[in-house]
Length: 411
Image 1 (cartoon, rainbow, N blue to C red):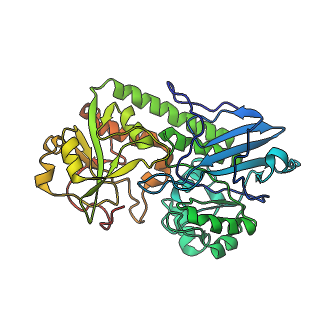
Image 2 (tube, rainbow, N blue to C red; image 1 turned 135 degrees about the vertical axis):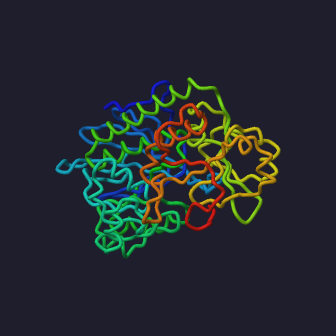
Image 3 (cartoon, one colour; image 1 turned 60 degrees about the vertical axis):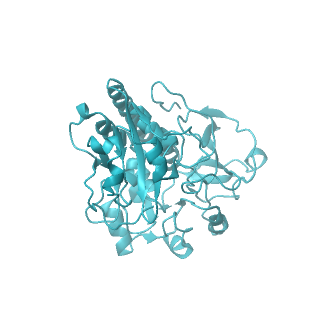
């Protein structure tokens, strides 16, 4: 099987990253806590991701996953998380889980009943047209109207969002899932996830948000395709996104190079969440812009760092444009500070509304937008290159210095 890459780039070898996605079905074993050794078989091309590999063997697939849990705004903590996943079609005799498969997780495919605890997972399943297989979600904040209705009515279970806590076991068991897809935001959740596996719902770690390149997030749709029997749909989806990214990059390359400061104000202190590296930084580079205060990509660190206003005043006042807040960040309206920035004086300060659902506390940016970087890239290009500001904005908008979002919570 050949999976596409974006022209002009090549997939990199596996390295650690951030998110833990848990998947399983009628499985055996408890994952592979130590280095499982070489992964042998006919390699499947999985472009862009640096957190998993896949091979074909005698009608079944083996997937190796290795990554670290990275603290929000910080660095990796604890040992890398590893797992070996054996995907065997229903009706086929599974291989013995011995030798290099000892301790691996056996998954019968295609999976039918899926529990998730984070919205990007819902977006992946929607992209493949299998959202009707979802039997549990994190809560009632789904961007999708039907999933939100089902959660609120009790038709599907609510197991808790992964950025707060491990899944709620009673609700998870009541959902009777074949598969749990769960973000693990903290290593202390591990013992709870072992309990999940002991209840017959094993987990497999996958990592999405801190892939060093934004197309690495899209690549996880390919694994979801393997699990759900939607491989062709997954490949077509990735190809479509890759083609659109290439088109946008070529368009931006024809424009004068610009610079952007991507820094969100954090209320309660003189601090800013400043994007510096990894996938978000790659989007800015591909929009033909220099990322002011940018740093070397590092999958062992989060995409942003916590910096002071003094640092911005020292090193970032010359940026052509400024992305000043995301959907949950506080409004920064100190005009004496703003006036010192070229972007403010030139009228190129933007914020990121993220396309909030009109009747729900949910944003498209953090659901399907996680695997549609082309949509985000298109807006960044329009922000940086006024000559290309045609059509509607999807995720970005000019800053108005009003409270344009619900609440004033910062990250």
